[in-house]
Image 1 (tube, one colour):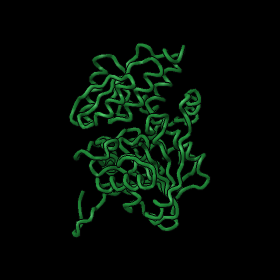
Image 2 (cartoon, rainbow, N blue to C red):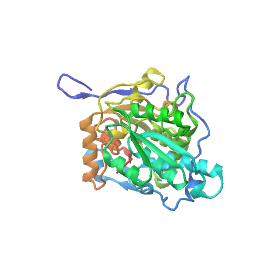
Image 3 (tube, rainbow, N blue to C red):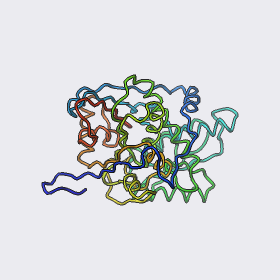
Image 4 (cartoon, one colour):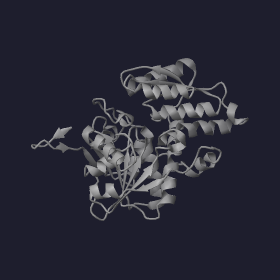
Length: 352
């Protein structure tokens, strides 16, 4: 992070010139359908719509008229929005396989790398439909996540110093063992399952549109590889059109989307390990980048100190989260959204 002469952080910011059209060489993939997600979710006994909170104390701190929080911390008992992604992709495959749900995917093994929450979704989906889950974790992932994964029946393999290294290891294992790789990122030649993961996340946007009769002026969306931000932005654009400012927030230690937007294609970034661990992704999803190039108005980066301040602020307001989960709120409080006293801001709490 660069600083000015007085030591204040100079945030990276990219105002998107491709808004509405997208990047020439990365076109958004058509056909995502939040209705298909809802149709499968009716069969899930743990599914219920997550709440919206009005946050007057956060609005006062930010100097805006209103802050609304979409609270994903309790999603299907897994603690984050990720419950809608990989588990949905696996459920689609179970539906296509037919037969009894608990054994529909017997004999199948799904493998992925994760910083925690995506792995929980893979583990949950595999357990529901009779498959096996193998989750690769980098050395930086807390052991608490590994314990939760094992408790859900997943096999956990430690591999690599960071997420990128664990992803390579998971891909190698999929090839060697004939397992199904289920990543939340995408790249040339690997798009089908990541597309379904992102489609699952569109349920969040569909719920927001139903829950919010008043359209906000700003929507702040945190991003790792970008799937959540891309899916929610795409769904809200369908309902609300061009008016809300869609602002994508990344750690300054992992500015994968902002760097790729500037370059006009997917690029790999470098940086230190971020305390915003679930956002600490150095390479964006190709599909997410394509959708965000069309739908996002701005990309900004967040310092580690600001990320923690966001987590502290939502905890003070009564909704404990992490620097990753509260990154949108952190960006608002850091003044990165160009709001004013009349603004109504929507933020996501993406994890507990």
